[in-house]
Image 1 (cartoon, helix red, strand yellow):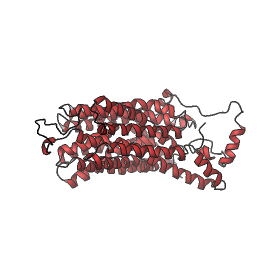
Image 2 (tube, one colour):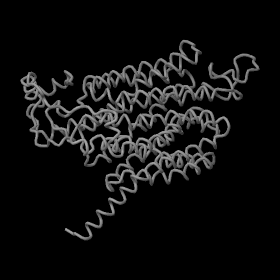
Image 3 (cartoon, helix red, strand yellow):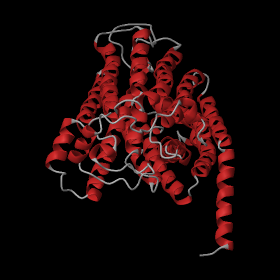
Image 4 (tube, helix red, strand yellow):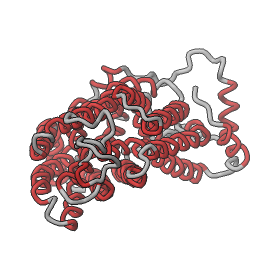
Length: 492
């Protein structure tokens, strides 16, 4: 049984004894929204440095003045990324993180349902910070072993799996289905905000001491992890409030002190009925989980290829420097913030999540082709196109990983069981993360032939994601049509 941190116990005992339940719920739910926002923002902030630093691990040395006379055209590169196969090696470094993340995610969701989410998250965040900083120490200590950097990425990827099941479950426990698309759509901007901050922090040091590009984000995520340890309340029941996702709406609200006394008196009562954590295959049987999981495989492939390779693409296709390319790439994430919020609003208004995703995917395909054609035309056009592509690419990805995952994790077929949200979230995001691992790996290899092939791959992935949603879209349209016919024949 999870227990409140001592800091929250003190607040409950001194300040919240006579606070009305509605006000108390508003205060706690608002605090959890803010805390989980910055929690996952720090997760993404610590993932971003590698996409910025890879531009100096292997770069064009012809425009630089060597400190000594040399005929080596790769004199300014960091070993072992100083050869002709640098794209493949950097792709391996990216994929080592992403495959570890994808594989660990399926296990992480099952663990999250069975442990204290507060400890689960804080433990993962502190260790994520340690392993993020470990990569940067390779520069400080002059380490040139490929396996050192792969090991750092694998360990960091495994620890990062604690984030998504933890924050979605914690927030989902506080918000019901009413306006979940809008609430989660705005909340999901933490991904883009984290990417932007991570890019700016990494870019500030990439030209002078790229070790700090990793160490500072590592310190930030570890520090937020300490805040989570002392101030997170992952379940409303812990402070005597009802869970909005259960069917037991008539449960009376009690103070933390009364609840604590009640728990002590019931400790010896046998056969207490508690929700049982759902199995992996039980989660797969929930309607829509398989389709959205496979769709996210391709949607996340596209998003993460941009996440890891966009600064490098801009550097190689425009006259901008490594720092300027990194800063310019943040406009993709600005568009992603707008896309996540817009997708949530449309989904709430229409009640058609799959259709919302499909429309954005349809428009995204030609926009990817247009961006590839016009990205080098001018700075203003590049910025505008990046924001539009970010909106269309990240909109479906954001909606599926947040509101859709939370809705499926509290599906009516579960009959109020609150022990499925983390497992469902992990299955959907874990499947998507497999695509996220493959995308940058393939992009690293085929970009050496021609960047056009990378964009053809991204367009094909969006088409496949669209096809996988066809059955759900058909069902949503049919259901909407039946509702309209009923309203027409039986007006109020």
